[in-house]
Image (cartoon, rainbow, N blue to C red; front, side, top):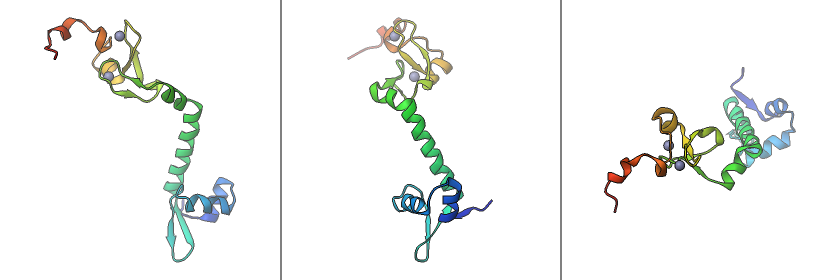
Length: 126
Ligand SMILES: [Zn+2]
Ligand SMILES: [Zn+2]
């Protein structure tokens, strides 16, 4: 497969008009190399990355974005931000608070920081 594509080829692949592709390039959405005056060449990899971003965008709109926008989920043990529901590996036995994969999955933490066993009490707190 060709590594470099002309605007016409990109237009054909996407089933869009030349003008549309040109606009995507001019707006910086689709990276392209300008050769000479007004000849553009698009790397196939860039086109694929662009399509991937669009796919992510649609996916986020359909699923994740709302969730993240409404409530920021953080791991109840380490405080790490959990970006999507898939990142919630488990929940605190007491409060059902989210736990991340490294705490719940790897360190076998079963509870959030607030509901962990006494250990924390012996730590000097100021
Ligand atoms: Zn964690
Ligand atoms: Zn808890």
